Amino acid sequence: MKRDEPAPRWSWAHFDGLGPGDLYDILELRTAVFIVEQHCAYQDTDGADRVAHHLWARGQDGKIAAYLRVVPPGVKYSEPSLGRIATSLSSRRSGLGRALVREGIARAERLYGPCPIRIGAQRYLLKFYAEFGFVSTGFEYDEDDIPHTEMLREASRKT
Image 1 (tube, one colour):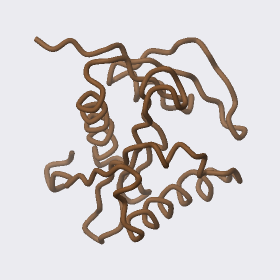
Image 2 (cartoon, one colour):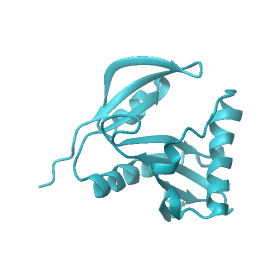
Image 3 (cartoon, helix red, strand yellow):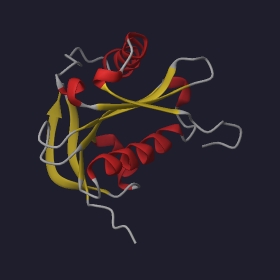
Image 4 (tube, helix red, strand yellow):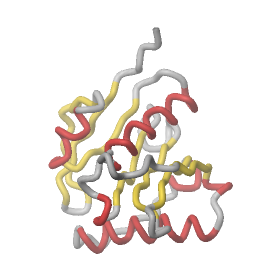
């Protein structure tokens, strides 16, 4: 995070614990990033939201500035996964995205213990996710006309 940026205040809830306002704001950010910015018409709500835990932080304006979901093992992959990782346009290059991924990994490990975590990364973000220990599995695919690569982070070792 930049020095003048306050530390994010994380909110965390299973789908069943999301209030309608939070759910609306989450979907608003996801629509802005994944559909409008990326010029990609696709069905964002995919069923995984209902079984996932959701992590987000709001900016000083009260809008959601960063978001991801932790999907349980067996839903998208055999491992738990992080997905729908997004930061608002106004929050980019502030360090919030890195803080979000670090917090998402920590929350996934609290839920499932030290275990591998899998993501489907947009290809241009491979170096970003590598900073957190994610390694390409070599499986590349297009999702909604956007090149993706599957990445795996091995289980953390607690000492």
